[in-house]
Image 1 (spheres, helix red, strand yellow):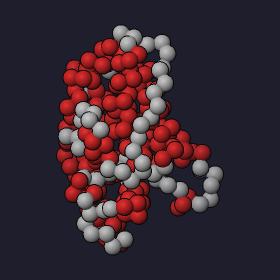
Image 2 (cartoon, helix red, strand yellow):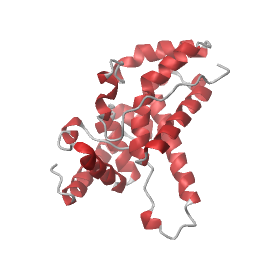
Image 3 (cartoon, helix red, strand yellow):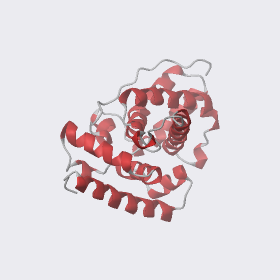
Length: 221
């Protein structure tokens, strides 16, 4: 692969149903795309640009959803999604299928880029005197379908996003990967490089803290 083919992002509007984005459009779900991913990666490494475009289309909505929940900003999320796939393009040769799924590898890469972006932004804002007004950008977040079912409309989505941003980064990212991306505990442990017990502990704490925050907004949980 010598040139990065341009692939237009196709993403849902902020506040959309993130967890169902792929299946609703007839795309393979994250969990069911393992064989397809392996085949596409092999073809990409062989210089097949069509395979690269297919790989991007298959995972763009998931990556964008994570970036949006991380930042709370549509424009920034789209820019970061482009950056993620640029990094994927440059480092695809380092992916080893025997060490885990492409989805886990992609989530780890996305998380690392988001953390880099957060830290870089934090340094750039260090001269600002209103630290308490700065958004917390370090992790991505979202909820399970049972929580989504209790929230409807743009206003509720904004309350949810605001609640997520009030969580600590480690709790937020764990909620996102488990409740939004529906990843297995072992996969989350691989992405975050922590034991499964730590994942479960963070998930319980995150859900409890989020419920407390939402109750302040009189949102039923």
